[in-house]
Image (cartoon, rainbow, N blue to C red):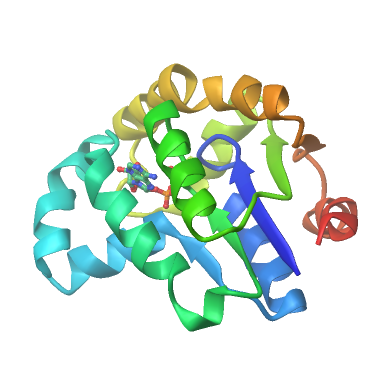
Length: 182
Ligand code: ADP
């Protein structure tokens, strides 16, 4: 039973680590980025609304991701735990999550700040080759992270459930540091 949030900049390795931990625990890995990319590929109404923001490296409007997280956390497979990757990404989303979890009588066990220095992030993202991984968009995503998402580090520190993990290490080493949290 684990309920974890992954904070951390684009390219920090949240997706990789969240997926590994979720499969170890047999709980869902809920990535808003993945859900949104699938919606864009499937040209659903969510995808059509989200695409322009994603292509520019901006956050999609809060209500879109809040609605999809609500639907996902209410699902029967999410009752024994979950790992959130890419949500919340700003204070409004964190407040909405907190209200939703109160409603569901659940709480976050840990907010993991996966820390990787900026120069390493850019190198990693340029090597990844996703559609939104060109240099201008990457730069914008990192700015958005600093402006909107980084304040959540303090937000969860104040709540007493922040854990900072050094992400600039071999993937397996990072996983070993995370295992005690799940
Ligand atoms: P990365 O961590 O590399 O930035 P993600 O897959 O988490 O990649 O997100 C890709 C894009 O999806 C973001 O740049 C943003 O446009 C959108 N997105 C994902 N999660 C959220 C969210 N919680 N709120 C707003 N937009 C989001």
